[in-house]
Image (cartoon, rainbow, N blue to C red; front, side, top):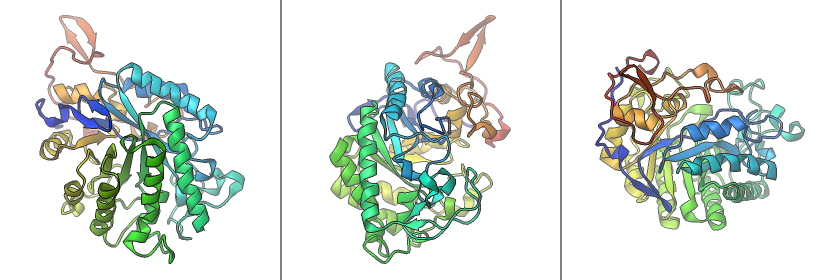
Length: 402
């Protein structure tokens, strides 16, 4: 049985990020959906509807991972943010969100060694800190992962500048800020983790060296668009795409400490919980039960977003928000419930998500999930307003959420 947070939870209380006063702490997590044009990387008209559906007044949305350059090698269907056509496509999205009173940040990233030569310009090798391939087959096709090209120092400086260009373009497109994606086994995270970074120069070896590109990227983005428009995402315990670090508390503790010292006015830090069960559905959360984000929360004094595992435990979201003051990012349940904020607040049943439609190209599983409706004296009421009449529905027993 799905248990819900208390309606009086901090989850439904205001909080500030950057210059924006939010009305609640439920966040749309950045979610790969692959609905952009594979040829142009321009967001489709469906994306406008998708993000508008999930907008609430004073609510924060973080748009899906958006690649910073053609050389970033994004998945087929991933959007871009480096040219005029892409900017115009995103502007339609941000305008739709702002028209409904929402706040939207764009997540910018370089896919690194997770790419395939099939997706790279001129079929060039994917890029990485070291020439170490991910084991197995590429996540969205393309055959086995290839041994990537290890970036030279000048090429690393170029990647930093690509983030800057993408950040400026995102602001031009109307985003309220950007999230620098340094998680989930993509390029910046590959530099952080000791399993994927075997360099012996100033970008490898010690924690300070492995953190260097992240701190340089954040510094450059901040100079371009401002601290209050910049957030960062981390995943200390994600083993997706062969990520593993020998000293996660020390590594991400250093990163958090340095960001607190250098950029205390960042919009937020966004951490993925160790119990995250999205990418490994059969994972046993008890194996990571002893791990906690609390040391990072203790260092960072600004807004803190926690993500991972809340779809299967909505009540936990309220408990974490009450204990820590965190914002809570939801993924799968926000995919399936465009009115998730209201459903959680009023205890209404949740639509089950359909994993088979996460990464397709149509409206199915994207814009066709219904908002909650109630039957009152034979009259059907579609819940679309910010504060509909209170209706306490019985908690749903949803096998997909167990």
